[in-house]
Length: 241
Length: 241
DNA sequence: CGGAATGTTGATATGCCTCAACTAAAGTGG
DNA sequence: CCACTTTAGTTGAGGCATATCAACATTCCG
View (cartoon, rainbow over the protein chains, first blue to last red):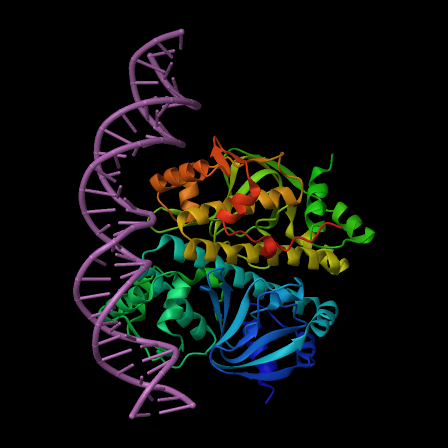
């Protein structure tokens, strides 16, 4: 029970120290739970949210909607993440959020979060730190989509997701549920569907990994890391003591 | 005198309300000034800064350094911006910072900033908001470099810079100093130098803008905005009352 | 059982990269 | 002050990676 508070604290502890007072403060937060269908939107561009969404289970994604109807996926979020933390201090959403596969989110009122920040600044700083790591991930996505060839780019994305899931025990051995379509992968990496398909085949042929039916299987982590030119420093995960 | 505190407050007031106590707190911050040569680095990947840099005059840029020596520029920063605010809560830099053209920065000790946040939470929230808008700009850069063709992409970048400079009176009529080389523009937009050159020519031919000798001249803002599919909502500038 | 969404494959087109040659401007040293 | 080098910008030719298009296979779902 209380999965909501637990996943939030586990996530924050990856990078921040929480005192027992902070833990008590977090445990006092109220929330409501919402179950999402695959691909269901829970925040749209232009919304003015009054609550923060916390991913409890499953995954969520941010995306931009372009004039021509195309989507650009921006980032993916796992249990413990607060994908719309920015709305705490910015009124209007500049992007939308949807579930990737079935997911559960908890909604925590902004007003409560802010009051908690005032009572326990360390909690506010931890959430702030969370949003800063999020920004680091966005920077890496710029570099990935702008400066790397498609195979490297795709390998890098899978590396990041696998690493982030692994850093907090959210993956299952060497496999990770990532229930996304090839079209969505293309709209993440900025490449056409046909190319997504062919690139996945070359990655499979490399014996480093497989991706099918929304499941990523890492067969040779070292090799995948090399293929993706992946260096996890930007994720700022505190070295586990 | 005191240009440092002034540019910071002007920038924060674009989106946040500051009480007189907040203003007093900001005015009490100590700093040291540093003048930078064009392209001079002031923070490198891997550094552990103990001070925050505030751009006082000129411009600064973030960049990633890739394995093959290539650079990927990530964002540009003008007077009032705190391009390394993230270092307040994340120890190691995952990217470098350099001057674009000659620039002046002020260094403010982290320890003082944090103490000010504890005394005046609204000041902390304003800086936090600043880092969140920064993240929105990064998201837009992902979309720009991933989903738009090169001409639109380049027009969008110029729109953003011109708009940001204009929002706070940092531009000069319809021209803006942006002392960057074509090679750097290419490393920002993820395109080759030759293409940068040819794309600039088509933009010039469109009568919307010109860019030469490190100066952007906007001749037809509406047309440029259309060419760049530019919608400034993501910059979250408070409508001027 | 039929239709929609998703994935797969091949053929063709094209936008951008690469390379190379050249110009122009700026900085350097004799 | 002028040769020399370096850096930045410009232009053309050619190739290649990836987009686009089209046909088909497969799975899912009503």
